[in-house]
Amino acid sequence: MAGGTLWIDYSPIRIPWYLRGIGIEAEARDLNYMRSPTLAPVLREDTVLGALIYSWPHYRKIRPYGKLSEGLGNRDDESGRKKRFNDSRTILGAGGGVEYQLRPLIWLRADYEYQSWPNVFKHPGTTIPPGRLNPQGFSIGVMYHFSHPNFR
Image (cartoon, rainbow, N blue to C red; front, side):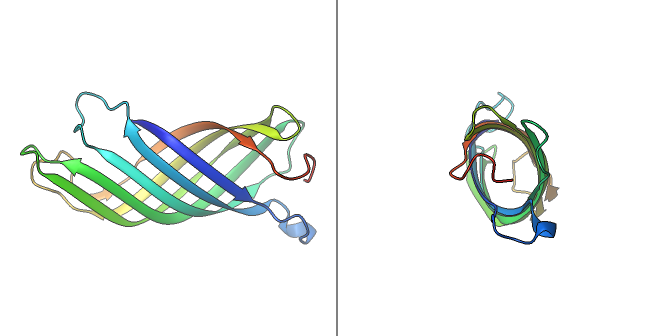
């Protein structure tokens, strides 16, 4: 499946030297497109997460980062009898990636995230087994920094 992602990151500038690189991230994702023919036509996954993020000092134009997140996940599904199900819960995530500076304020970002959805229920007629759901995937996007280009 494919969809859109929005990231908003904030890293304070005036902090002690030993905390440089620490920041927070808000992330929203909607996976609703490009399903394989084996998936239900109404399958959809939406997440809203807050994360603690750490960016290592960049080397030339490359800056790696890691993050731990928590938030809300929502999943829509359909059983074999065309009955729709909705499931929302608190989820955890971990991930990381790399940012590449294209211009002074424009960066290209490649992101990987692994999520843990606990206590997922088995709905009659669906293909997802009960227990834990662990979606994972990659996102690629362009970022604009609203701060000075060499703030780190």
